[in-house]
Structures are given as structure tokens and as C-alpha cells.
Image 1 (cartoon, chains in turn green, red):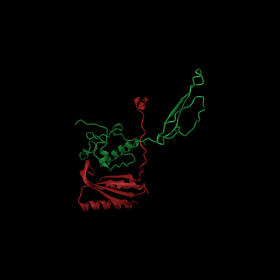
Image 2 (cartoon, rainbow over the protein chains, first blue to last red):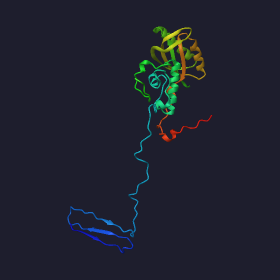
Image 3 (cartoon, chains in turn orange, yellow):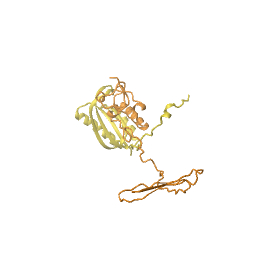
Image 4 (cartoon, chains in turn cyan, yellow):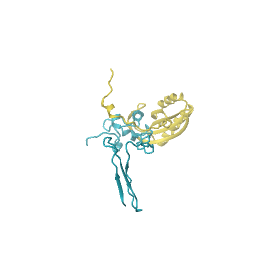
Length: 144
Length: 124
């Protein structure tokens, strides 16, 4: 309970080194009082590597973002899927900056669209009206 | 032997005539040394555009899919034979899409916006 604090002045005011020690004695079992000590700069610091940050890979790193059609197979017979990447008014294939596909997938999709149009699976100058109400995948807005 | 797929568009006919046409087609395939694996019917539907074949215009057609194994040299003769068949509107032989492996895509690397700011100088 009785806290004895002793403050000792430095060895000399010229040196500007001072150290403060505080000793606390425990009388009660329940109370714990903080033992405070500020070591003098003249004292040797014991360096321990326990609490230093360990070099490691960022554990909160998010994986690479996967975009639509990543790892999925694109077929020329899949007219509904391919129709999502063409304009409903002109039937032109949407560019990469609008669809947002990977380089490989954009090439695959455009080749599949071409194939389907030539083989008689998909109309060329427009989009099949049955697929006009499909959810929008491309980054494009139309005037309503 | 590599695996091919025949996307066949037949004229819109009655059932027995369609059956006869398909039978003829598959027999022609087997004569050229192809091993027919499967025959699928994608239904009869309106064509996406008017197709004129053998001095006739077609608006409706029956879609059929035949996947078969064949030597690469036989593909040309198969297409030749099918183009002469009157009931066939459009034959197309393609490498089977299931044989193409889907490569594992890890994802897209984020491109820093500074690179996109200045377009690369085009050389004439």
C-alpha cells in the first residue's frame, strides 16, 4: 500500500543524464501496482529479438480478382451467352474496354461469335429478341 | 484419331424424311472411316437469317450435332459429299470443343493507372 518513490538526481547537472527509479512494495494480495523503471542511457540495453517484426508475406493479401468467364469454357453453340456481348441494335461485338474480359477470353468470345454467325446459329445485324431481356454484363448504358 | 463435331442444318422436313437424311449422312461418314460417337438433335427452329442453298430459300431448319472420330484427311471428302446433298442447308465440321483444354486462369493483374495515362507512341 505504501508506495515509496525515490527520485534520485543525476550524477551531475552538466551531464544531463538522470534516472528515475520507483520502487513499489506490495502489501495487499489483490493490489498490483506498476513497477516503473526508466533505465539510464549509460546502462547497457539488452537486445532481444523476440518482439521485433518478423519478415513475412502479407497475410491479409487478397488474391487476384477473377473476372467473368475466368476458367469457363466458351462454346459457339451457346447463343445466349454470346448474345450478351453484342449490341442489340447493330449486332457489333463489344470491345474489351466495355466487356471487361481477360485478353484470352475476349479473343475466344469474339471468335465464337464469328463462328456462330457463319454457321447459322446467331443472327449478324441484330441480337435475337428473345435474349434482349438478359442481365447486362457489359459496362454500357442505353438511353431509355 | 482427332475428334470432330459436325454442326448440320437440315431442311425443315417431315420426320421420316429427316430420319432418312440423317441415316444417309452417318453412313457417308462411316464409309470414309469415321467412328460416329453421338448424334444430338438441337430441335427445329427458325434460322437466324434467310439461307439460300441448292436454288431454294430456307427460313426454318433442323439443327443436328454429330460428334465423331475421323482421320484428318477424310474431313475434306465429308464436307464435299455433304455440300452436294440437297437436304443439307449448311454443313460445318469443327474440332470438338470439349477437346480444348480450359487453362487455369489465376486472375487479372491490376494494371496501375499511371501506365494507362500515357498511351504508347504509335510508330508509323
